[in-house]
Length: 203
Image (cartoon, rainbow, N blue to C red; front, side, top):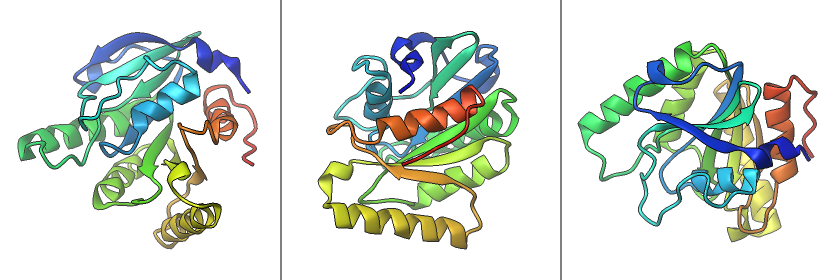
């Protein structure tokens, strides 16, 4: 377990990718509103107040950088796919994500957070399409695994893997639970491989 993530501190927020801070390396977290993205970030960093959580989906409206030291960051991207967001706001989000994912040189990887009970929605595929246009690697975090049985979790993971393979998408994936603190070490291993060039071992 890499304790560097437990020292993460809020650094800055930006409404536009071009206003983001300079960095050596960073990993971004994205996810459909209400998929458990903020809770996952808080669990991974052991800081329940780092990323804002709310019962109201779509609270994250800005690109938030959390500093790990030595020019490395975790990044919380705006949530997407929330029905009450206007079409103009959706277009703004798509444009911002296209700029960020497509041109952010220091972005080493994207952690795409999905509710394991409702994975690979249309909005998720849209974000994957944007991710594929850039150079960042992709890791799928299937959250809320505590809501399913072990067999259901295994089945869902395999189903998502098959769908990604069928679409020729290169990605790693894992199940995760903020409630049960499940999958933290595996996620840290992915972050280590991207931020610190360490070998990746999941499971």
